[in-house]
Amino acid sequence: MSLPTLPRGATPRDPLAVDVGGLRLDSPVLGASGCVGFGRELARLGVAGDLAGFVTPSMTATTRPAARRGVLRESASGLLAPTDRPSLGVDRLRPAALPWDAEQVPQVIVSIAGTTIGEYAEVAQGLRRNTLMRKVAAVEINLACPDAKNSDKLFSHDEFQATKAVARVREELPRSMPLFAKLSADVTDITEVARGCVKAGATAIVVGSPLRAIGRPTGQNLRADVGAPDGGLSGPAILPITLRAIWDLRAAVRSGRLAPVHLVAVGGVAGAADTLAAFAVGATAVQLGTALLHDPSSPRKLVDGLRAHLSDNGIESFLDIVGAAHEG
Image (cartoon, rainbow, N blue to C red):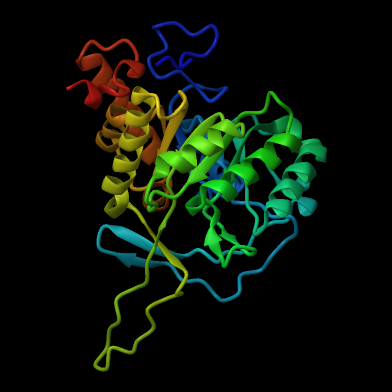
């Protein structure tokens, strides 16, 4: 098993440098889709430089409003949020609306979504034709979307449909463009889905997305609003599920069931200890979501924690930790 993980020109003196699926990063810490907007918030808070890159909110073929007013709800060790969110259409993407030209904004990864395979391809095509494409470092295809032609079953829950979606997007993008496939962790065999995505052209697999959930009924008659029925649970509560999915994929690579591919953990990662755990089970990068909402300074604290761990233990590169849990 061999994965190209050090970026070209990097040396052991770059302990956090990594190449993830063809995307060169100064560190393995990214901002997750939907939690950092299109970068303006990062620039305003002055924390853009603390992340190696960020993933935009998922874009669709045309702008869509949310079907209902969404409300964020805290849960024990987690956050409940509506998955039915408004989305910006690729046809409305304008340079003036985005701060991607600012020097402090890191690598931009555009997330795309769709309700049909054709829409995924349409979004990728629209993105490719946009002048902003020169500022895009990679594309993340969000497969945790309901398939309108398959009884609203998530693309990430169907190996065949996920494979077709990735293949169509790959056809529309430049061959050199890194393509990340984002999968749900709550699936019977994530390896089967990931294998199809890799064969179709995905250069990295991102695991996972908010898990389907609703709030706890309250009040004397237990009829109080439990939130949107299509809500999702994120935050520390789902970290063990994310780690298990990454473990399974790394094990599949080791056994030959899955071609070598970089893995990115998202879902419950908050601090350096969580990140080190993700590396140990097989991830080569992490995305921060809920942690950023709670504490915008969390990326800096996380990176400082990683550097301290490597220094204290005489480790030249965090890549030496990746997959370590499988060696025991």
